[in-house]
Amino acid sequence: MWFYLARRLLLAVAIVMLAVTLLFVMIHAVPGDPAAVILGPRATPEQIAQIHEKMGLDDPLPLQIVNFFVDVTRGDMGTDVFTQRPVSQIVLGQMPYTITLILSAITWATLVGIPLGCYSAIRRNSLIDKFVGVISVSAIAIPSFVMAIYALLIFAVWLGWLPAIGAGGDGFWDTLSHLILPAFAVGVGWVGYIARIVRASMLEVLGETHIRMARAFGLPERRIVFRYALTLAILPTVTVLGVGMAHLLSAAVFAEVVFARPGLGALIVHAVDTRNYPIVMGTVLVTTALFVISTTVADLINAALDPRVREGL
Amino acid sequence: MPPPDTTHGDTPAKNATHGDAGAFAQHWRQLCRNPLGLFGLALVVLIVLSAVFADFIVPFDATQVMAGPRLAPPSWDHLMGTDQLGRDVFSRVIMGGQVALLVALSSLAAALSAGLILGLIAGFGPQWLDNGLLLLLDSIRAFPVIIFALAVITLLGPSLATVILVVVITTIPVYARVVRTQTQALSNNEYILAERAMGAGTGRILGVHILPNVIGPLLILASMDVPLIIALEAGLSFLGMGVRPPTPSWGTLLNDGYNYIHNSPWPVIAGGVPIILTTLGFTFLGEALRDIFDPKLRRDL
Image (cartoon, rainbow over all chains, first blue to last red):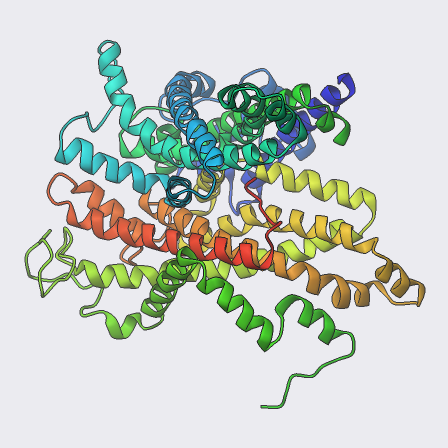
């Protein structure tokens, strides 16, 4: 286990470092001066020289990369061009909104998806199973931003049940009512996804000998399904959730834009619009780190639960 | 036209993956037994036809600003109403389909070829190259797609070409990995070892024996990526960072409609429904094809 842990963590660090380097290379691969890119077309030569000085653009390239790494590990991601506030402060300030959205989406998706998948597996090939199958595939296929817009149209504009924009903040119920529609849009594809995975792994587990044994012993079906089958069958969802962090983040970007919610997605979209380069970089770094951390944690949990994974790497 | 040149060793491999007329009829019967797959096929055919013949279908120029009413509901003149500038939404939806398929097909072609080459190199080349490529591919996949797309767009500016570039870069790792795994699994087979013992070069082994076996699963994967790519193009265009106006795209239609969602629901409905139908059509068809050709290829499980 320790060997696996070390290798997996090393891989995670390597991936983050490579991602940071890629990001760095990308900025320098753009034709033109990064300082001019940051400042935009109206920059004066003095401003450009100032940025050069501040960002160390006149240093040799290897030194720049090293400096970049040192700054990033210290949590220094530069300053916002417009407000002069530290980028890390701005990005971290938006993070709780996105995390709340993602966690609530995944929570409701899991709570609905697991029972659906479980039921489909028990009643295999029944009408309900087939219906759940079609709905699951459709929910996965339809892009989350289309879901978000239609949810907005139906529940906020037509029915007027829920607020259309913002994150609320005026007490618990206000915050919750602002969270429902975005969380629905981000999570609905995951209901289908989780249902499918649980169904498939449930079918696999139900065919195994220990389940047959339990049946032969005459244990009640309820006990067999919940105690002996489902506890094993939900394991694959852990890994998928880790990898799914990327999809969740992407979906959150759209949900935040459609519902005009604050968050990392809204932040980066606005920054791209205004070509606010330090903010874009900072957000990319933080989201990438979030993603790598979540896949690593999921892999480690999986390895802790399943010895085969540990030996596989 | 003369029959295709059948070089030795090529035919059996082709037969194994693509099949002859009899196998095709069998696959077709299998597809006919799958109502969802047939439904998907019908949708795909409809969408492809409407994109190919778009210029003959559209009643108006999709970019022409008309003097008539703005944000009008559907009528016989304007089947899907008009947008905030008075443009005919139906024409814009049809032309948008052309853009969506163009992005999907061109980026898939580029990503498939690049992924194929990188995967073959990783799978057949020396170990250090394999490790290096894997690390590079994994770090590209470490970026959430939209975030990566936004970073690239900041650098290169929003355009159709940028969208295609983003799709290509983010899909290459998936294909390269599949090809690599397949190549590694195949290259230890006895018939390949025998071929090598008889003095066959790397080029012949890769081209004649490995490539035909790798391409089948790869094409199925690619067909299942079409909805993802269309969703990405529409999503970026919705954010105003994909296709530039006045070129119609389903994403820009949605964005226009979103801005006027309190005035009229029709533009939003007209922009979203084609996206839903296209993604559903390709997904249903892709799943049916996968079940027919390669039930083991279940990437999502």
